[in-house]
Amino acid sequence: MADCVFCKIAAGEIPSDKVYEDDEVLAFRDIHPQTPVHILVIPKAHIAAGAADIHAGNAAAVGKCYTAIAEIARRLKLEGGFRIVTNSGGAAGQTVPHLHFHLLAGRDLMLNMG
Ligand code: AMP
Ligand code: ZN
Image (cartoon, rainbow, N blue to C red):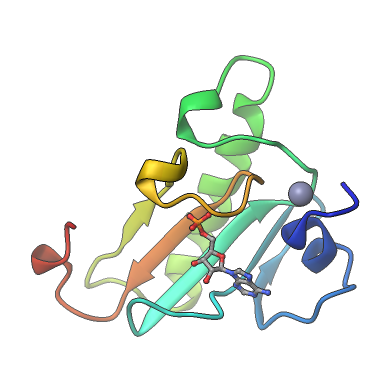
């Protein structure tokens, strides 16, 4: 999608600090990290969705992203734990309308639920 920042990152038109890539999924470090490890996991295809917009027609992309998340956790040795966040809608802070999962780790997340 022409004006989508994550589509541009997936196409290599905007540089990113990649941590994982396969045919369908890309993961890269968030430009404004909220935790020591803050990675965004996206389907390469533009799926205009937050967590409220998942349905049978796009759910496979969610599975692909979570499969990648498990692999990233192994590669980065996140045995201590991590959190996956998908903001959905403006009130939740969703700013990029391309399905994505925040992978957060690297410090005690129990105090950071807000
Ligand atoms: P959300 O607010 O849930 O839609 O998440 C969007 C995230 O994308 C934010 O955490 C931003 O910091 C991040 N972001 C926006 N542009 C870039 C970029 N060019 N490279 C890496 N992360 C980005
Ligand atoms: Zn997109």
